[in-house]
Image 1 (spheres, rainbow, N blue to C red):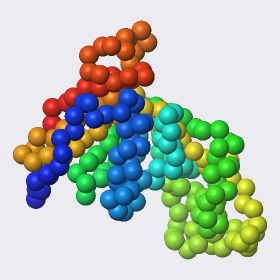
Image 2 (image 1 turned 135 degrees about the vertical axis):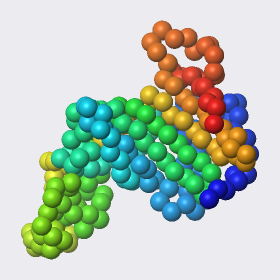
Image 3 (image 1 turned 180 degrees about the horizontal axis):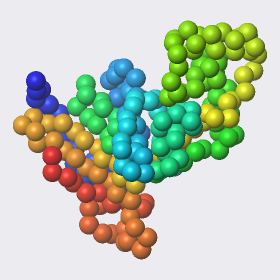
Length: 219
């Protein structure tokens, strides 16, 4: 099974000075193209021994500091990030023949930021964050539903639900961000921003700016 991608070439001169600026452009394209959940991304983590795991989560915030998602800190990904902060993100925008691949370090955001986002969630999602001991083994679905019902009785609709202490935001600060554009005959464009080392000049090879250089990878 194979599809011939037909799209406009991605040139170095087309790129924004920083990967986050470029991500803004591409994310807007994914949204306007009508992609289902364009903020869905695959988060890959690993244990200190290098055993990987991956799952799809939703990107909730992004700015010059990086990409933010929310999770139970006691989940598998939460525990792995606490022990090994190096992660990878993948945005698989197949309908528009694009991917964005991020590598970087993950850390918890502040509790004030977490609480502010938690208050913006639907009431049911707030209760779900309390009811689910994410990644733990449970006896049945009914166990989960019973926990949810108990919380719903304790915090009825309209009553403020506190943010769980074991739940919060993770920010991934990028070290590399690759923008992949598919083309026919497998001659894809792969342009990768790499964070400059301290002391590395802004006028080095590969373009880029504001602390970044850009390199083109063979497809």
